[in-house]
Each structure stands twice: as C-alpha cells, then as structure tokens.
Amino acid sequence: MRSSIPQFLENLTRNLLCGGILALIVVSKNACALTYDREKVKSAMENAALVAEIEVEQLAHEPDAKFGVRFRATSRLLSVIRTADRDSTLRAGDRIVIAGLGGELASTGVYLTGFPRPHQGKQYRVVLNPGAVAGEFTVVGFENGFKPLGSARAYSRNRTDGSNGDGTGPFLYWDDSFFPIPYYISASTFGRHADFLLAIDTALNTWRKVDSTRYEFLPMGCTEGSGTGNDGLNQIVFISRGWELDPLAIAVTRNYYISGNSARTGLIMDSDILLNGQAYNFTTTNAPGSHDVQNILTHETGHLMGLGHEIDPIDTDASMYAWAGPNEVNKRNLHPNDVAAIREAYGGTGNRFPGDIATTNCALGKGGSCLVVHGKPAPGPRGWALAAGLLVTILGLGRWYQRRRITSAS
Image (tube, rainbow, N blue to C red; front, side):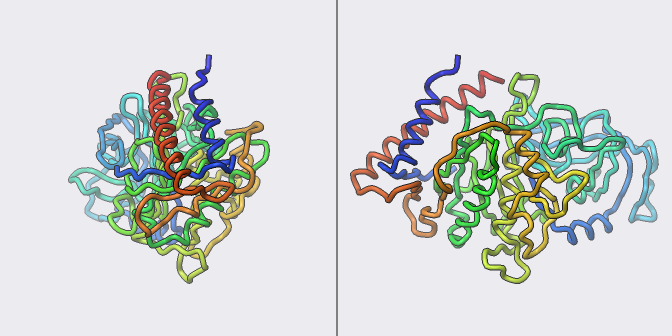
C-alpha cells in the first residue's frame, strides 16, 4: 500500500505554492547529458591519436570524489584503423585501457548523458587520445567516439546499459510518486547572471506544455552552494571557472540512478545540469558568438528526464539533436521526435500548476535567502516566518522519506 506521507507532503507543498496564502523561503544549503559544439568536436576527432575497433574484456569501476564513479575498460584491439603516430607499435590483439567517467557501484549508477558507456563483452569503434595516466586512453568526441559495432539505438532514451538506448537494460526514468520534480538554481554560481533565470524557466515550461504526459516540475528557488553530488537536490549550476569535465562540452547533465537487479532499476534519484561558462559564452540577447541559454537548457531538461540524443531518421532541428552552434535557437521548441520520446517515457494525464512555473524571484547577487513565489504576491514578515518553518519541516521529512523509500526499493 502506498503511504499517505508523500501525498500529505505533496498536498501541503502544493497548497503553499499554488494557493496564494504563502510564498516559500528556501533555506541556504552549502554542500553530469551533454550538448556538443560540432566544429570543435569534429576537429578533435580528426586529430585524435588512435582510431580502432575494440572488444571490452574487463570493466572496473571505482568511486570518484567529484563525479561519483569512474571506469577503466581493459580492451583488446580488433583492428587499428588509424594512428597519428607513424612509429606506433599498436597492433590487433594488443590490450589497451580506456578510462572515463560514469558507471555503476553497488546499487547506484552515474550517467553523464553523451559520455561513453562501455560494457564488458561488447565491441566498439573508438576514437582515442592518451590519458593523463600513463598507459591509459580517453575517448575523443564523447559518444561519437565510442560507437557500438553491429547495433543501433532504437530509442532516444537512455538505458542503464548503453548510451542513448543502444543497450537492452531498463530505461532511466522518474517515478510518478516523485512528481512534481523539484529543482534548484545555484545562486553562488548564477549571481552575475540573473537574466538567465527567465530563460531557464521558459526551457522547463516548454516540456511542461506537452499534452498527454503526467510529470510536473517544482521550482524550489536557490541554493547558496554549488555541490552536484547525489544529495537529493536537482541543481542547475553555471561553472565559470574550474570546469573539470571535457572542455568541448557546452553543458552536461548527470543523473544518479538505482542500478543492479532491483525492481526499480533505472529510477533517477538526483539530476544536475552543469553549464560550461569557462569555455563558452552564454546569452539571452543573441550576443554574437554566444550560446542561447534557453536553447541549451531545453535540450538539457530532456536529459534530466532520461532522454538521450536524437536518433535516425535525424531531425537536425529537434531539441534533442546533440550538436549546437553559437546563436542557435532550434532547440527552444520541441519537434515530433522530442514529443514522441517524452510521451513514450511519461505518457498519461497529469496534474499541472496553473500557468507557467517560475524561479525568477530568486534574489541572485543580493545575499540572504532566495525566494520562490508561485501565484500571488509574497506575504508579510509573519507569513515569511511561518513559511520558513513549514518548509524546513517539509523538506526534511520529504528528503528523509525519499531516501528511505529508494533504499528499501533497491
């Protein structure tokens, strides 16, 4: 039997947000999908050190302090297609080690959409460069540099055992008992980009407006930190320095999910969207040479929901098309393949908040707590105090119950 606790929390939160009686104060907390730049990725792949066909013989995973899980795939070379080093001694039959981010440890998986997902016993065509560790290689071109041999993706949805649906394992998904899906803005990283908030809201609202679907998003305002681990906070983070993922990535969405043989394998527990403000400029005003925030966030929201990249027959205007260029706006609007994928994943009739959701009252750059207002104007001081107390209780109970339920389910 389904407990009444989450329903109570949902109803109370919905009343606070949508009934117009109170607004919410989000208490400050200190605590990776992907869009490619076509020309930069193409150039990197053309200049890679090694192009080969491999078979993964052994796959090992280890914890990674920043990105959850790291893999090492010991692989046998089936053929060497091209090498940039004329003196290379690599030949068919040799073993190499390919290292990267993502994978599964115990009952938790980490999926950085668009990054390679090697699986033991499978064969791939790979594009590689020497890694930072002697004797290891890293993939060039993300999923474009790690293509399965003899198989093709059947769905533009991510699976637990393959990039963008080429495997046979469960799809990544959000359980409807977790709707509405809460999300936060990292105030400490967006402090100088308050103009981005409306574009973020608009991107999420684009997916909300697909009819015959049952999910909903819940804007929770700001966090003061920029932590992006498996902390139960679905954060949108702008990284202007210290980007530690592939510098060719414009943006990355990382999903933590239940792995193993649980009845809930594939259930997303936490999802964070990271914008690469170190290598790329972003704009809401069509500034020359910059990436449109709404364009990129619409694409990344699809990844947050478990969708992969556009599949054949490819619609290059689709929101989930992997490539993006400066000043492009194609991804702002959903196209037939985008709509078909999200309806397949979350088909049904769901409740929606009246009107668009918004986090634009988040007090970026002003210090103190951040605000979320949905519906009517904010209350006076006594209302704020009551709202703060209630929200602390709600969030504490909600996170405790969610963790307890996920743990028991897996």
